[in-house]
Length: 394
Image (cartoon, rainbow, N blue to C red; front, side, top):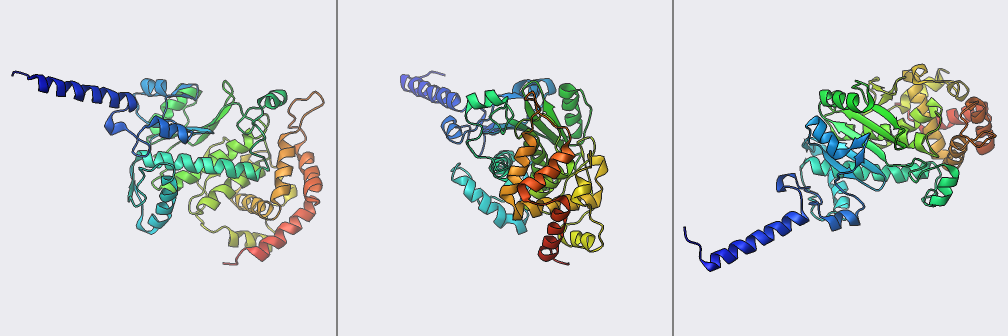
């Protein structure tokens, strides 16, 4: 076949345009993000990117190479997130909720179609990351922490803290569809062939990691995934606040995690066990009437009893409900005081200036008196009266 000069010129122009497009969008079209299209300017404007980046004990690219796995990745202002997000059809009864959320997200990413009825992996990734960032701001407010608290690098260095609520690197989340892949990752990275949701302190980079398997936890609903991620992050952000140097009381951390996920969607609940894993509890959407019953029967664990619980193994089903309710009470009626109480607990230092997690029972008693102006018995009475006046009987 003979090529004319005009045909050669046209071919040259097409090649030039193709190379330019490839340079701007390095991903193949089928792997290009349907939300941001990997547009560098749009990603920079929204303080995010799709990698590669450091992650766990290695980096996102090496994880894919070692495991022959192709997840999607996203880094935001405070998180790194990666994993599998299967296509999910929005139930008809929830389309209005998702449409409102997508309409809001469209302000950041114009390519979003709010009326879409099916979320592909990129939509789900962006939406989860956006929810995580919203939660970061909400958690910081719950802790009574100013947005400016960790921005002064010299101040952080003097205190031995990092910029991410006290941790030195971003919080990480990993979502696997298949249990076997999750087990493989856990073995390669943490040396633990564990398949339940797991939180991990990455000492090498001073950051907190959380991972789970959709298959293992039978997660088929997008809101269930949101809840379990928010539950794990609630623990990690609390632990990371003013740096993860010692364990906080289990009633406080589990109660807060329940409060966060139930505020998001009460249909899906997560329960922590002694190993930091999560197990299924009883199915009950509305915990309020059950808490009322426990109070009426004088069977609810008291503040005085809960502050002595040393591990998740010492918290039973009813205790989970009570821990949630007591955080609900404190955060709704005394939010400022709660933040001050929490900040004092996590900021404790010994005579040499090192983090001090000793005598936590006494620290909590003193903290209640100092910040709430209550003894534990007075706090118990205040909570019981509030719950009976606030929660429905049925």
